Image 1 (cartoon, rainbow, N blue to C red):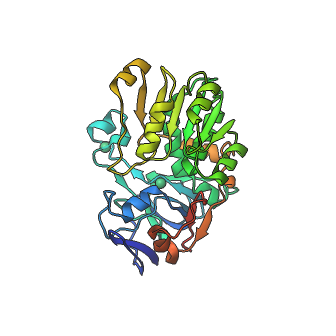
Image 2: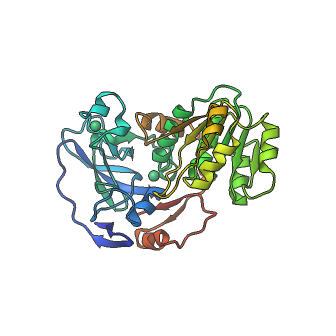
Image 3: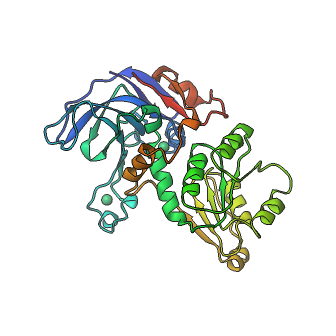
Length: 337
Ligand SMILES: [Zn+2]
Ligand SMILES: [Zn+2]
């Protein structure tokens, strides 16, 4: 089969790869769509814990075409989404129920072969059944959505609270919809790209702001009696995290969701932190949230059609990773077959 293989920093080629035989409880998936995300760029540049050679791609969906006899509860022909994160179940954290901190964590598309390929071998424990009327290109958002669901658990929004979302990419626009479902009061989204602010407005943001425009602090403070109760940072850059610190109301909470680069930092002024009684939380991966994510897609509570994913085949993947991309595109997806 054809697969994109990461061979080292800035080196990815599309090669023939021969699949091994299925191991116990494994299934073979014919990949329909695999989303491209920030993590793939980190892998491509060598920043992620990914040992080449490896087939990247961790946001994928497809059809079961073969299964080991021990793989139960699924049948040939089923449409499925894949939770890429494989927890060991035995380490200290797994035994505490904090599986996202698993010290033996493996991930399809990061430490094991993933979905930028025509086929992928997956342990049946990672497979989630999809309704057949859910288009694959929508279902492929299940993985990023499952991470957002954990971010929402971390934010624990109460009815009527004001929420600021920094960033209007896939994550920010997904978070926006979850924030809306959660019963927030005023929802404010901050994003420099105009077309993304327009989508945010259509998806239910009460106010959108360009971070580079003047007096956004004064305007947001006025709308929210001093600042949003909660800020969800969905960019993964120092500027965005520091903007969150400045914007949040006294007694407010910040969820740092975006995956940053190693050099990025948040500059917390201790007096400011003290006087504001700030609460700052991170959000890592998708512990026990994948099933809920599939449910939100299946019941159309989250609208991903608005994201209008742009699809291309395996051969173009390296060009996009190299930077040949349009920043107004919300989501790129690889369609390997
Ligand atoms: Zn991802
Ligand atoms: Zn573990």
